[in-house]
Length: 94
Image 1 (spheres, one colour):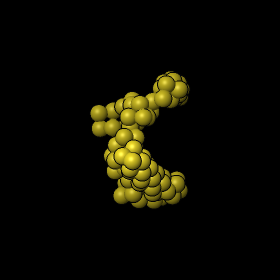
Image 2: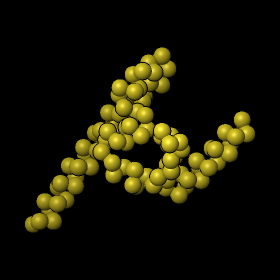
Image 3: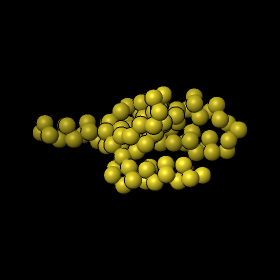
């Protein structure tokens, strides 16, 4: 339990700095959330193991329902960001 407490403290320290920690094939990764969200939705979902195809493999764990909703939410937010960026570009051209 002690090792988890140290990990939690590290995670919270990075969080306060504006970073996120996530597990990848290479192990724990630390990234600025501002850089992380520059990825396409598929990249974000892949890195967070929250793609629909992954989430459905954990259907016996009730939290899969929320994880599945996270995927749709991230995709929609990325679409909205793109829409607003396009509007901004059009406004700047005027």
